[in-house]
Amino acid sequence: MTSVVTADLDLIEELRLRRWARENYVPRGQRQKTWHPIVHEEMRKKDVEATDSETTSAHYAWLKS
Image 1 (tube, rainbow, N blue to C red):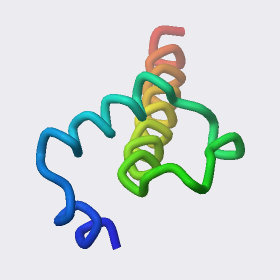
Image 2: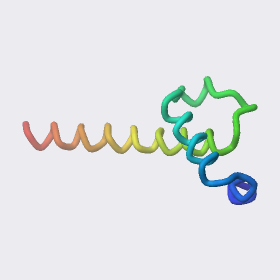
Image 3: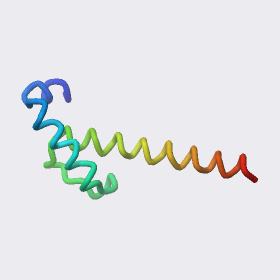
Image 4: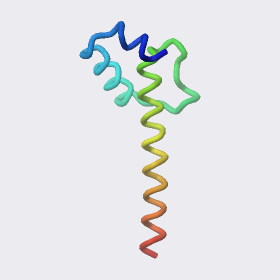
C-alpha cells in the first residue's frame, strides 16, 4: 500500500511528511488514523529504532558490569 501512496507524492513532499513524523512523534496508541500512511510508516520506523536502542543500551550496560 505504501508504494502506491508514495507514487502519488513527489520526493520533497514525502521527505516533509517523514520529517514531520519524526518531529511530532507520538506513541502508537495516540496516533490519528487520519494521518498519511507515510507518517505512520516513519513513526513505526522510529518505534523500531527506539527498541533497538534500548536493547543495545541494556546489552552495553550488562557488558560494563
